[in-house]
Each structure stands twice: as C-alpha cells, then as structure tokens.
Length: 100
Image 1 (cartoon, rainbow, N blue to C red):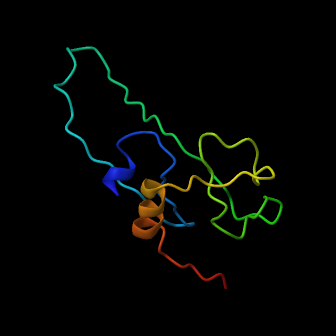
Image 2 (cartoon, one colour):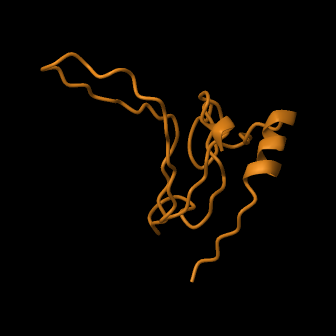
C-alpha cells in the first residue's frame, strides 16, 4: 500500500468499515525541555459512507478523482483511463466485500 501513500493522485486506498491503516515513521529528536511537539497528518482523499442517503453508498464505484466535476459523475465524465490507472485498478482494487 505504500505506493498509494507517497503523493496525491487519483489512486486511493479503498477501505471498508472496520479496516485500519497503520503509519509508522522515524520520530525526530525530542524537542527542547519545556516544549511540546504536535504532529499533523495531511490526507488527500474522499470519504464515502455506506448510508442509504449517500449517492451510490452501497458500492465502491464510481471512484472519485481530482478533476471530478460532480459525484456521481457528470454526463460524459469517467474515471481516468490510462495505463497507470488501469494498473492501479488491477493491482489494488481487487477485494470483494459482501453485505449481509
């Protein structure tokens, strides 16, 4: 999954309820005495809940992308269809989750 976290693009980690992603990194040296340090996590992505009032909330697709004009897609709009995006879909978007 690390390649999906390196830079903002249209290739996301798709998670289901209960999934977890753990990030680990080397901590910098401790701050000077009396100082505190905060860490900020900047994320680039979308949240689509599985609510019946959410557009297509019972499916993963259609996948969002940065140039999207509206969701669901505007007429004539599609997820990017180039070699890199097709490879991403083949390699990472393979899991099936059945709803009970």
